[in-house]
Length: 327
Ligand SMILES: NC(=O)c1ccc[n+]([C@@H]2O[C@H](COP(=O)([O-])OP(=O)(O)OC[C@H]3O[C@@H](n4cnc5c(N)ncnc54)[C@H](OP(=O)(O)O)[C@@H]3O)[C@@H](O)[C@H]2O)c1
Image (cartoon, rainbow, N blue to C red; front, side):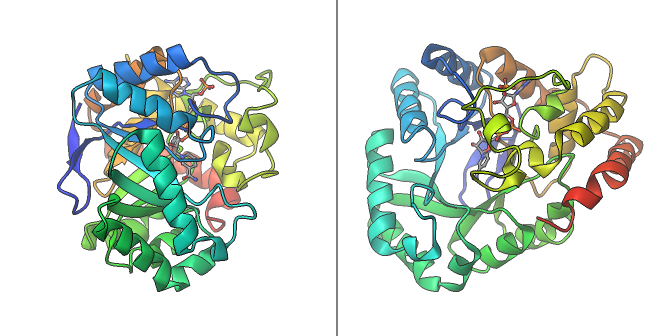
């Protein structure tokens, strides 16, 4: 496992880290023993950052991580999120009282006195025009409740706006072979400001692992079933906003580019790591075997210019028109 500096935090984090949404909720049935085994395996393989949120299983994901931390001695950086428990989810909800309450809940769930890093959880765009929200986060940092903060965003423009706030240490954004626009304007600007980047949904919700087919069925409580058309949250969070049929056809083309001895999931993760601006990819995983496959992407040789060009060709011909200007 290789490590990269996370912005200005001074932390060196594993370039393949762990996304803990799936072990909390919205991804069908999960077994806590299996989830904990996956987390342990990740640490065994050098993963030292786990991304979660208060809303993943309403604290369940955070509580599993607290259990893990009790069972291990290594330094583990936990990046959590706040805001998505608001109902309705509005900019007005991102106020001092609510943010303080959310952070107190995460502190309890994670069984700690100070959160490593809290991200606003894809807030409404209006939040970026309310410096007082970021002022509340500064105050929570001064009070020792949080060490650092960042923002998880849906769109490139939100990312660019968010990093204007000097206290923002990280941006979490969808970046994968189906979502390349962040690399154009946002990455250079984030690098200039030394802002860390967590590349989320790196496997396009598992699609880029290449194991899906027209016959794939998802449980009723899996967002790949209930949010296929953006029914509950942003459609971009499910298969990166690419319709299932188009995604399957693109995957068939990408499969031809997998280096010998590697898998499509590893190619997808290696592709993300080719961008220096990215601090880490945070693939979700529910089982130790997935963690193992994903962690090995860090050991893969660099992709050649020709390989990068071919991935780009698949994006340009099949995916671009569906996503490029939308996020
Ligand atoms: N708004 C936000 O801030 C937000 C939104 C989304 C995600 N996130 C964060 O980003 C993380 C990653 O995104 P994500 O979990 O949505 O999507 P992802 O990482 O693209 O896909 C994860 C899913 O892919 C499958 N998978 C993983 N590794 C695999 C492998 N090697 N082979 C086959 N299948 C594999 C697993 O599901 P199956 O085994 O069921 O197929 C897994 O749950 C989340 O866990 C969360 O921490 C944040």
